Image (cartoon, rainbow, N blue to C red; front, side):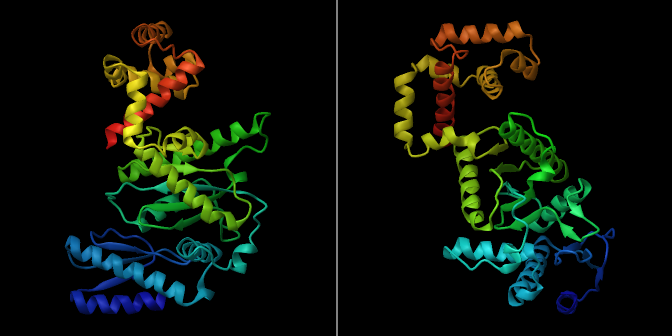
Length: 352
């Protein structure tokens, strides 16, 4: 691979008429590019002794990406299990099916891998390679890389300009001893880990990423379906303006019920359930924020008051006021379900 970088370096020096260097660690330089490497290789940085325009930087980054991925696909022997998995998954998503490489089947899949799909904003401020480097740094800092075995415990698959699929061993995300309510605790622990990753990206990049996840995968054949499921979850979350940025596919089950309905049908539902004044109340910022937190805390008054930094009696006053004005008592499950669905519908309508 280093031979290919040297050839690219020579081409760039001729085109730019400026010195181009390749070093093994990042040096302070206004125009530098991290070169993607096969897993286990040293990180290389290409620096250019010339101020570049925005267009020139984009073209150079495109040449770097094309050089790396072209040669990986040309020589399958160069692929690690991770790159082989990415190439195979891309082919499966494009063509419907592809032969699973032996290097993937030989992995210990009995240790389930939790799929997490990162979705970047449409207007990204950094490249996919830079995001991969940030995620890798986060994983290594949190001991998701076995230095002795030179093995990635977490796999990162770049499947589109906006999507990174992470496959993390379930044993790395949860405590060794999980209580009686194991499934709930596991979901909570995965969500907590994802929140830490999202916070790191927010801090480093200054943009908010969505992260969706599903149950652990124990066989690679399921990966394509898992990716499609999580991609659809992100689309649903955007359509209905789902405020949480971390969620499992089960968290969005309610949105799946509304997905087949047209805007006209959704509008008709709201008109039947709510009078015009009540619809205005449902769009009141204080009420909607209070209700959103109340639903997220599973109708728990004390926890909701704590999250909102208000007294418990203040919250009860707001809920009672809502009941008196609308007739719906959200402390009761049936009424809470109607109000929750109504809020989601109104958000979907406003998106159009």
